[in-house]
Amino acid sequence: MTAQPAISVRGVEKRFKDHAVLRGVDLDVAAGSIVALLGSNGAGKTTLVRILATLLPADAGTATVHGFDVARQPDEVRESISLTGQFAAVDGVLTGRENLVLVARLRHLPDPGAVADALLARFSLTEAGGRRAATYSGGMRRRLDIAMSLIGDPPVIFLDEPTTGLDPQARLEVWAAVRELAAAGTTVLLTTQYLDEAEQLADRIAVLHEGTIIRSGTLAELKRLLPPARVEYVEKQPTLEDVFLALVATPGKDPS
Image (cartoon, rainbow, N blue to C red; front, side):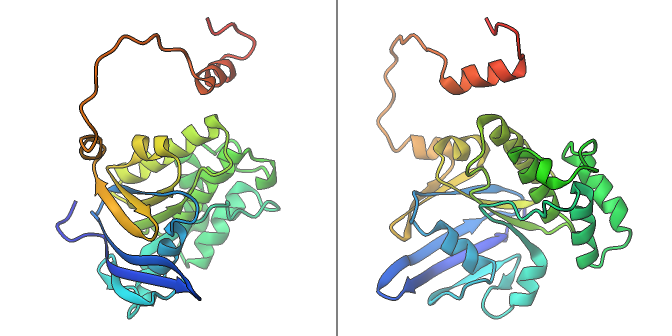
């Protein structure tokens, strides 16, 4: 990680008519880290991401992405980022490989086929690469979507609620893909309303509530805000998610 934040936000405000969505947001994201922006529906997470991705102007405040000012240098910001929204931007008519080749050509990269094949292998989609994307499961479509966002090696990626609507197994597939991004040095700003997702993935967590960041820090730092835990013996029962994942991992076999 470098000393200069990959994303820096100071006093960003946004209002839609009489409704203030962002009320002075301050946020830093270190290069090569995963930061989870945690908040309930309507907290302003997507609005902030759209501002950082130059899709929406802020009413006040400043923001930089990869050293470029979002308001004054939008072209440079767009060259430095990729944005994956809440719904996979995959063309179902095309095969997985054709989706990747198309984006590589749009980015004017040499040898789009080689780029596509490398990403299919990286995201364990090689065998499905020749199938139409419409036949993919939700997790496969999301992995393909993230693979498409990596074409051109953008240093900063925004993932806006990437596991919305996915089943537990598909969520784990996406989590693995996100961890791989950070391991390769990509900076990830992840918005989510799922507490377990932030806990599993993020180096740091920022809590966005009513338009402002009310707390931020590592998971350990945030846990220290509560009173010390009491040690009690509690018989832990498996969750429904535990049961589901055990059953689908060994179909037809008693998980006990």
